[in-house]
Structures are given as C-alpha cells and as structure tokens.
Amino acid sequence: MTTRVRNQRQREIGRRVVERLREGELLTQDQLARAVGVSRQTVNNWETGMVTPSVRNLGVLVRVWGQLSRGEPVGVVVSGEENT
Image (cartoon, rainbow, N blue to C red; front, side, top):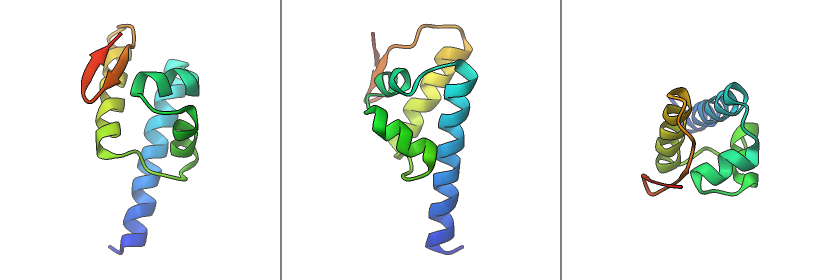
C-alpha cells in the first residue's frame, strides 16, 4: 500500500469516526471540540477529511464515545484523563 493510499484511508477513518460520533450523539462541533480539547476548526477539518486525528486524539474520541454510549456526561479529556 502506498503512503498516499494509507493517508487517504486514515483521513476517511477519522472523518467517519467524528461524523458518526457527532451525528449519532447529537453533539455540535464545538461540544465535541471542548470534550476532546481541540478547536472547533480541528473537528471540522477531521469531518471534511482535510486532516487526520492524531493517535492521541483518536483515543480520546473513543473514550468520549464510550462515555456517551453509557449515558455519562462528557467532560473535557486531556492527555487521557477526564476533567469536568
């Protein structure tokens, strides 16, 4: 697999994760950005496939998704630790 194809797939994965998380849980870009600890523009860039979430941010997105799926309030997650 070429680097270009791998990068395209990574961007698509990031876009799908963010899109499903936001739409499925009815979060705004701003709400998700605050929960992950990034700017709203960063979330927008993930959704549009302009950039790929970092490994750290993908981990945080998974934790946020877990919180929401368990019906827990979403706090701000910084470096893997939850802060409300």
